[in-house]
Length: 212
Image (tube, rainbow, N blue to C red):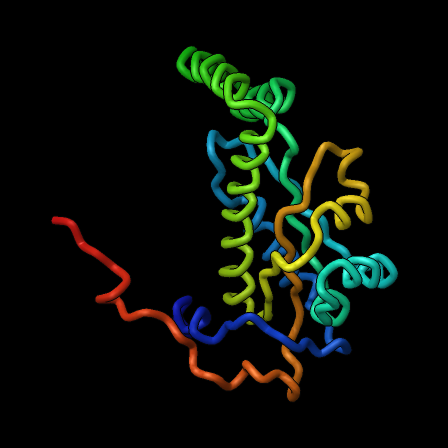
């Protein structure tokens, strides 16, 4: 049985996708569910996910992404978009959802709600966005691991103009800002200079410090 770490050894930042291959719906849904289940600070889930398959929209995104072919050649383009602010309405939405799903109110939880409302109010809009964006990267990590587990290729991408992508996807109207993109698909049989190169990572001794 193949282990998860063997899948992570297999994966790499794919430079050339086979545009004729499509990720199976079942695999895609499991990757999306892994992102949805990813942990976030205070359980707020302060980002949303856009799955872009429309070829015209992807062509527009490619023009503001340094002409990177993965944007148009992949099977599905995931765009992680963070809340532009952690507002009281958004905090209350998630706390109320928790109460609804669990079926009860907890005094400690409600006290924590009030404390968090104070924290985000003091922090301000831009700092709240930055905090939300960092949570989106947790979702990205879950996506990369899930994709590797499913043997689906993926390429995390920050090389794009976020303001332009926001405009293309109409994110400003949704009070969201694009953070990072993740093309999903299958590597091409040839033409990718990176595919057969050894994975380079620092040794455990130079990476892990144990404090006992």
